[in-house]
Length: 389
Image 1 (tube, helix red, strand yellow):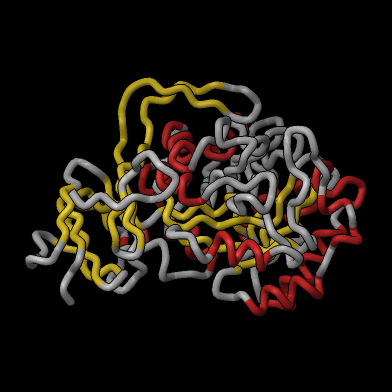
Image 2 (tube, rainbow, N blue to C red; image 1 turned 30 degrees about the vertical axis):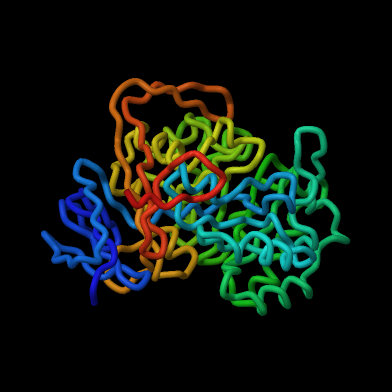
């Protein structure tokens, strides 16, 4: 197979293969063709010298909101991914069965960036989310649409990876876990995993995770008090440990109000790392405190989580949560996506959702991505622009 693109001489970190070494990565026909030293080329191969940089499988952001123009919280996936090193954006419930078809036709299908989705069990998804209007879609049980959700999920299994529900004081009001129970029925019927949002109680963090099944995802897992997974004494709640043993996955979902350094320090001190790290980027947090995926990853690097495991939490772990093993890896035959990163040393200011600031000594930066075997470079503009020079 003749490679059409080779990334030459980068430090390849691929947790799916336990690789951390300087080598080349070759792409052909939209897939990863080979890893190795001094891979052979021909006259038609595009060579990119990435020496001094890190090459990873294409980053997966497991929690985003990218139904741009269709919901008030949606941001432009291509603009975001271009600067954040993300090659797969997973939209988590922006659309429900009543408006998913528009999301697919107008956003997912035209996108250069891969967009996958958790389908909201609420008919219109997250429909009232802004600085002025904030209505919890799960508070209105009449909007729960299990029959329609099963139908839409079944017909769109190529891009729908699971079911989404939001519960908590802001999302479900006095309805408690009723919406969660409805969503679990849909997940059971479709054979798909569930992603559950949790905000302020009620219900409690413990109440929600007690209902989740192996392979289900609790997002906003490192929330501040109330509904923190850590106790006041800095230990991990026993219910949280039991849920992990049962196979529940814990996702960061930073967002506007769902990640605290205090919680993260307690969890990491107890050896409880997140399964996946995601930004929960949307219109109300893209300019802070979440900003983007590489900033979210940088926070965990500065909190002491090893680089290889930070990368795993946005590559192979995310791919396994999605049940898409062709993603998140640089194995030959995998989807031809890669991310080129650099790590800058210095003093960098990071902020969490409570307003606490952390001075970190490193920052992860995106230097470019490969999508379906084609090289794209961060450059100003509304779309990915291919750099041929």
